[in-house]
Image (cartoon, rainbow, N blue to C red; front, side):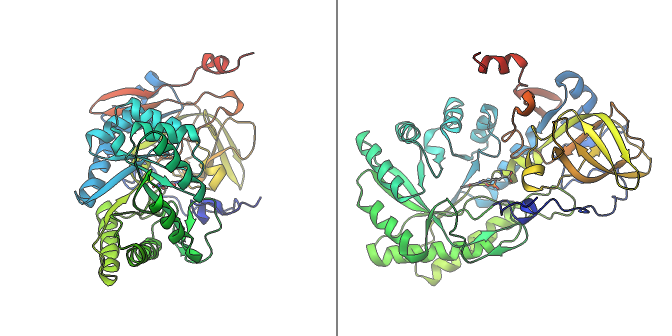
Length: 463
Ligand code: LLP
């Protein structure tokens, strides 16, 4: 089965190759802090706890499968990003990774801004009280209705993605008597992957206006002539799950080059650049993500250096991390249902969820870790594939991992680092019910997105 390249990188897009697994960890009971939320630990009986609450109690109260999100970790990561970038820059949390009204309130309290990319995300943000001025609106094909709502609400910026949209947003803003702050999203000819970047020919994608052939310069020219628009800067987003800063370096250099061209042609220095999101997290112990302060320093240095070289004042920088904030803060808790050992091959462990709560393994060949969390075990490691309960063999949650060989039906296992793009991409496949998201903090657990019910399914099905 071949898959075409995906922005999440080649490790997400490869064929479903065999034998990704390495040797089992020395201690299967150990919880690698790289992949688990910060307050996760084991209690004196060996059961995993988060925010001071044990998984047995969580499973009892909220059921499985369920996502448990460590609220203090989420808040700490927000603070780490805003402290790293400081008052001279803006951090926009990318809501597509996971958005709920509680999340919007945490973002406000921690001083972050929010990137939304649909009417639904905009509604969630506004309903939870996010000031419109702190919202950026994205998307390659925003509807007229979405643009009207964003402009009327007074969003802080709309990121223009095409020549048609430049005119469309300008008209709508003018009709509504507004001058809408906008950025232009450019494709800089860089596609970054987890461990590499490719710096040619990646204009072949639906997003943005190419820097090549003077197209972005033409977009700037048009935006500057339209009364409804206030052009505040240039935007670039180069990919997702990126560890290597080299792609950002090329992107920043090319964006600053455009700012210099704009200054030379129009005599104005655009005040802002946005370098997008895409910073990688650890899904397994093999991944080594950068800390926000390293990223802030690297990006700041690149932009300052390039601006100095071009005689430009350093613009205000913004970034849009989604995965790097919410990804590590949650795990999915499952109950083991059936266990099927295949002699000499592997053992299939079926859980009560699957591709409906985590499509990333099937879609991108993403790798995850897994641990037995209702107890510890000293049994020998066994090679497992954690699979779901859906009616297809591609329904894989964790392709290759090791769990103790005394694993039994009824045990609870957890998959860490499922905070980003899991609930957000969950489906009702097989009429399954999308799991709840439960926020845990200081010994308190509360549902922030409830579990779907069969009544919800029937309500949508109008008969
Ligand atoms: N800004 C823009 C303009 C984006 O398109 C994205 C992600 C982000 C920020 C946030 O990227 P992050 O920091 O979360 O990587 N569903 C895929 C990821 C798709 C990302 C799309 N855009 C996955 O599960 O890997």
